[in-house]
Image (cartoon, rainbow over all chains, first blue to last red; front, side, top):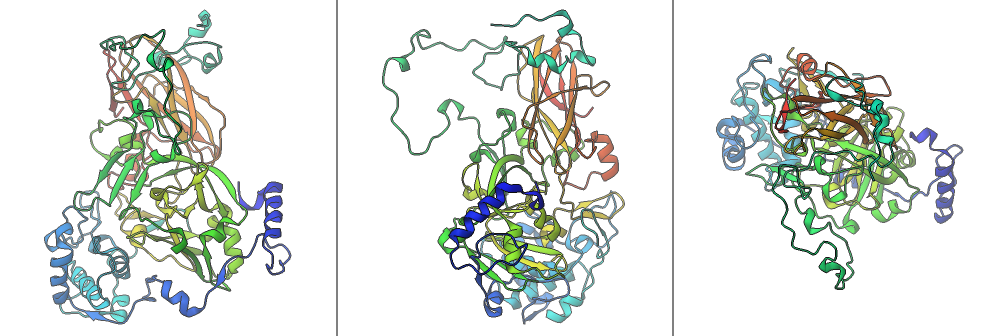
Length: 184
Length: 432
């Protein structure tokens, strides 16, 4: 059942609920009849909640790091599950030799498969390391990201990653995805 | 009392002894079913259960029973009906638990047996300390308490949720031998009750440029995915209740997004944030995961919809047959596109098919239970089921699916499942 044909049952419930919502503002014509119980948020409050990093780099914080710094962090924080040099262990393979994806050489490692470099930073910041998510500084995350991109030969070994350079990285498989249920 | 079978009742409607589904309507007809391994129903060749009670006057008829309980549990004799767990050995909070589909009947999955997929464990959320924030391309960002959401008009839907990674062993070169649920049980069906998301989004005021919504959970993975706004406006709900009670922690307490027909990962648990945008975020769980690499080297992305699928739950692997007899074949079917229109069953490996009876209610994007009478003569047989949904989509044979998708896609396996039954009544998973 869609919202648009929810029928008289919903309308009756909604009408009842509006009575409860004393003080709710006047409803615009056609607006769904329900109480207005959300608290308005300021831009400053929203910024504290907003963790999103977009493919164009919006949302990336200040900071910087290189592959050399990142290797140390990787070995201490990541290698136990992701394996030496990112080759995979109990957690996913992150590093693979650059090669075209085929049925025989299928890989979902970062270099051959991931379409956007910003995803690495976003995912580490929100989810990794799994035992202590949120524990790495922005500089540390830039450094691990640089290490993973360099190990996959997507960037050079001495390239610094920061909000500007990371957003500018073009992943080899950027155009490797066909959208199925949504139009591009 | 057993109803008398007329000779025409036993006229097969397809190969291998499938009988007409009308036979199920015969009042009092007793059909055999395969029994769970170690089941209390003794199979004909199983050792007899030791009788320790006077069956005519058992001890529980002669002494007062147990006192009342504040929250009921299943019988201790059903202790084997549990989820099976498959977790990462270095990170036990990352993994799945499977619904034991082969042990359940009807269409509702008990909440405690609903499958789980956690990326980093089950957060213990105090609802007083939890908020839902709606922001991004809206006129006014809004923050909701859980108590405030409980005051909104609600809707209930009976909805299946299936993990996009369910049945992924189907891509394996050799058929995996596991009980049905431990292979296909990342799918469950509940009554979900909550607030239509469109109501909340409208109150925030949708900017016409918004086409996507990024949904985020409050677990330790802070799991996020991008979803098409049009679908969310159509029928998504912010669910607060599952099967009549507040959602269990492992299913998203206190709030979960429920998007009818969309793969499990999009039904974000522990929902904390909804950001309206004009593009997807390209999260790890919509790029590296939950995408399907094809033989061409391209990958399918944003494959949200669960296509039609069916499974025979009985007889199924590790259950026992009772020898040549008339059986009720039982199973489940579902489609993310709407109602199940029909389920056909084959007892000869797909050479011939006959339509099964669909048990009411048959609801959109909900489990549908099917049943089929079958006269098994004791010779080797291969059972299959094939669902067709109301859009005309037909569940594919495995070889057709593998030819189209290759074997590296991992997600969205919905090929026809085949059970091979040998002359000893041993049931195994076969590719046929």
